[in-house]
Amino acid sequence: MVKISEYLKNQPVLVTGAGGSIGSELCRQISQIKPSLLIMIDHAESNLFEIEEELKSNSIIPRLISVVGDIRDRARMSVVFQKYHPAVVFHAAAYKHVPMMEKNPRAALENNFIGTHIIAELALKFGVKKFVLISTDKAVNPLNIMGASKALAERVIQTMPEVGPTKFITVRFGNVLASRGSVVPIFKEQIARGGPITVTHPEMKRYFMTIPESVQLIIQAGALGNGGEIFVLDMGEQIKIKDLAENMIRLSGFEPEKDIKIEYSGIRLGEKLDEELFNDDETELPTAYDKIFMVGKNNLDKAKLREQLFELEELIKQQRMKLAFKKISELLPSYKIDSSFPK
Image 1: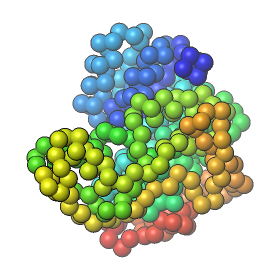
Image 2 (image 1 turned 45 degrees about the horizontal axis):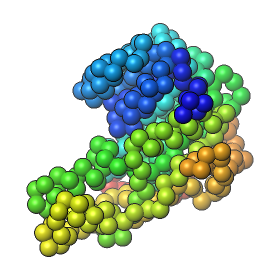
Image 3 (image 1 turned 180 degrees about the horizontal axis):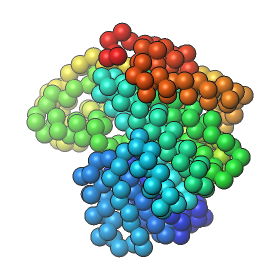
């Protein structure tokens, strides 16, 4: 970890979404590397308070700054960048719950897409050395608005300059065990109540990785990146959610179906039966690390894409959501407009 983390040591480091599952673990692991300053941004005051108190008790970091703020607030974020001049930015802030975002599509687009654009532009303006976007497998061939908003965030980073002071990097991976809102804590609560455990579909599969392992690989990918790369973490084989539920029941000392029932609630709006780590037009390339892959570069028309993203951003800001959804489906062929979406 010493050589890998050298780019963070004695440097001011900024983490957005610092109170979330990935963001807080990033703060823990970065603090062990001893940056000169750790700036933590989150709009959720309680989550930010918890990670601040935890890190303060360790007394490792010379300076720790907590900022309660929204990444969509360009003026507020600009003040933070201007005041603290971070050398490295880990952009983990995102709305991530698929069914919730299906009901609130504009919020997903404003936060995950426009918010990413704001933070990336500020990173470039204030001379950040490395910018790491935390992405998701749901951004691959997206069917739901959460995945589409993260796919658009990836495209924002792809349109940023590859030559210049800031090296823009994307790290894509699947689900993490025990994160807020994930199936593991939900299943634990359901088992504690005596069941039933609810699973959407018997064939539903997902990639899983522990939070500490995924964050360690994110930091490694950040060290690898020279600008413009999309790194993909090796998540192993997909696991059936049904099998996970049965194993958790057994580990709790019960017998599936006998002591704790499993009920199937049906696939929710925008969900896939299984996830993918690479888009159909992407190639998988190895890197120096066994657990990190890279997406092969394609012939992207950055100027055209930048123009399309700008048009989409303006439509969202003007609340012309019907046209915005149409533009998204043009940019992301897998995404189809659902007539039930609030406009």
